[in-house]
Length: 219
Image (cartoon, rainbow, N blue to C red; front, top):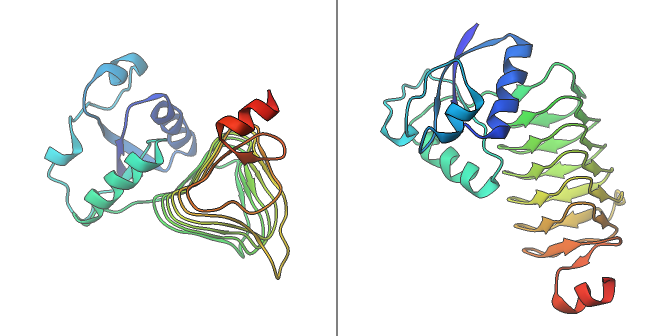
């Protein structure tokens, strides 16, 4: 087994730890965080190693960033990338990944995630339990799927997008994909039926922009 370090000690890191142990292909050497509060709460076996900024990593070290906050995750990734560490993908053994699809480094697929044909996924992707990405989708860097996200075919999701629990993204067309722009946030339970502009926060079924006026209309 290869050695591995984990950045983060939260509940998500606890889940990722169990996925790694269940796969049985890495040995966890230790955990990093800004304090020990959650490390102590989850009773990790490998030692607490403090703040990763103060650790002397080598170019052979394997690091997994088990942080659900996509903004913080990207910040940690960029800092450690400059130190030359390796960022292996963690795919639980229950996942299905099409041989015609590609997923860049530092990505985590939780149990029962499905990636079907001809999907192209960037770095730092996280897909939580029971999510899927269907055919011919393009997903940028640092995108997060909460549990049970359903991303249908011919969808383009740009960088730094957060998709909440249970979101359904309708299928686009081969010549006109449904597009979710950079930095958008899709609230839990939303149904996305048309493209979303960069930086927008969307909610509801069908999904509309999160504004006071739209909240009143939906209440």
